[in-house]
Image 1 (cartoon, rainbow, N blue to C red):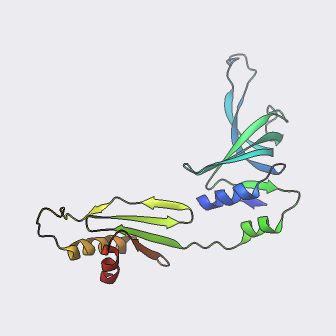
Image 2: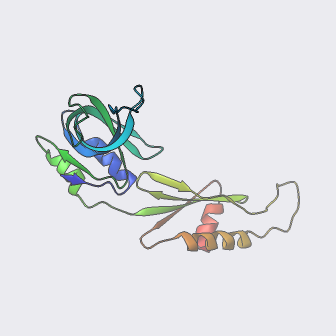
Image 3: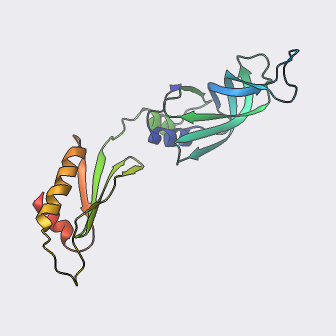
Length: 199
């Protein structure tokens, strides 16, 4: 099956679907030692190759959205890459691969073919002093810089109007919201309810 991960959640799905003993075909680079008259004997040149790996180990790096598949090379389009040598293939969003399994279980097929729910949540954590906004899409949370109300502490009197702060937060939310988004408002005290009523 030919697969292209389009978002980070797809890498998590591949992490669940790819198993030990599967074969994965993809593009990678490898140091290949050239036997030329003027080449350095200790260092190889990095060349792009297409390999088929027999999978031994899979790991995911959630921070940088990469899936690393380790295994032994069973086929290669470069004659200087020896079969049976160990190699790792790093998959990123947008990288095309072919996955070959002896048996596709029902759950693996469902994970690959089911229509994903692409609903996202716009999060607003608010109290009288500041508001933090973020967007939750699948397993990814993107935070935006905090907005400050300018309200001072309880000991000092100031002319603070919470409605002006609410207008600023509403303006920020209206620029961020997309069709199908749900807004989740939370925080300590009663400010979250007042802001929800204001909206």
